[in-house]
Amino acid sequence: MKLLYKLPKSKPNLHLDLIKNGWIPMKEPKNLISAILLSIPLMIVASMISIGVINIFSSISWRDFGFTSGGISININLSVILGIVFLLIIHELLHLMFIPNFMKSEKTSVGLTLFGAFVMTEEKISKPRYMFITIAPFMIISVIFPLILSICGLLTTTIKFLIILNSMGSSVDLLNVLLIMKQVPKNATLTSNGANTYWKNALAEQEG
Image (cartoon, rainbow, N blue to C red; front, side, top):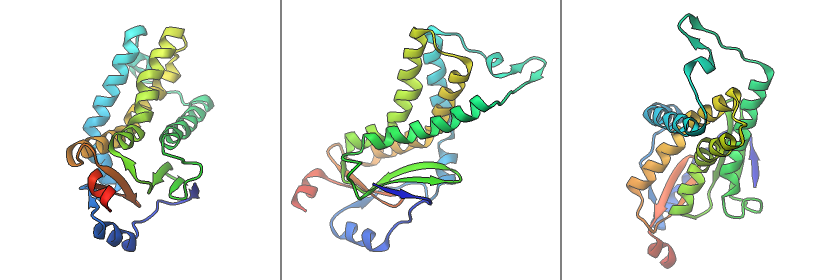
């Protein structure tokens, strides 16, 4: 596993090798800004899912976050800032821990930039596992976690905020899952070259 301090770029030589060996590039947003813009509807849907889960056992309203008829009052304290930093770390660790042999993998990277953290891997991964790796932080933090905390009576306003924030931050992950579902066959294998994703039919992969 490698530690990076900037987003890795696609390697032209690796791209040619992948194409030569039958790997097919996915049609994806060309950059992070495009991906974020395309994922805005999913951001709303994901937030509503988390709010719905929270509402099963606990109440939630705009007033909890400082929105009232008299205006907006938002208090950002040290605990909230630390919570956001902790959330970013946990989100990326949940991606990382489900990558096969991530500790020993020389093709897996953990990145830290001024804009946040990221996890990338060039390991060859089956479609179901790749999708699970991609969606795991949303499912665990924004769906399963609030259910457990609600039952235990530990769902505070700050934690509700962080759960919904994670849902919003997971929108690009959800977009990637939808793109994979639409473009990649059931039994395919996926790999990456920088920010670009490629797939190959499982039978073709065995032959190759």
